[in-house]
Image (cartoon, rainbow, N blue to C red):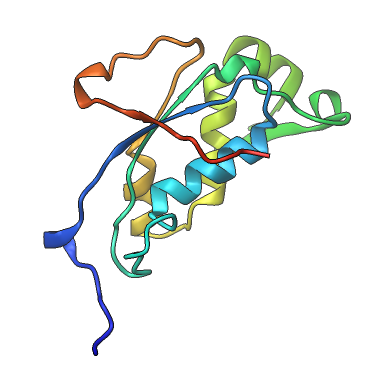
Length: 145
């Protein structure tokens, strides 16, 4: 008996909807990253992009536990002198909650070509509406703790 190794020819991609309403932002992001990588499939192969598409809805209703709203910052640098930009998560969640969710998911993906390719299959929406009904997405039924 030989070990099954997936390749691009036999990868089938599904679409999943993950509802973030009332759930911790990090737990939702970890679940989405797992689906994007394909780790939920029995045919997972580490060197092949075998993940599925993920639609995250209700990103504005995701919660940050503890004092993360006031103590946590999203930090990036423009590359110019004095170009350090810091945005408090309280402000980020109020203005662009889908961006906060995207940052969290992309931070949990590998920093390789596979991770960058998987990040293109992520769609995050602020409310409950999305525009991917034609793809017939399934609701992610496993528990997000």
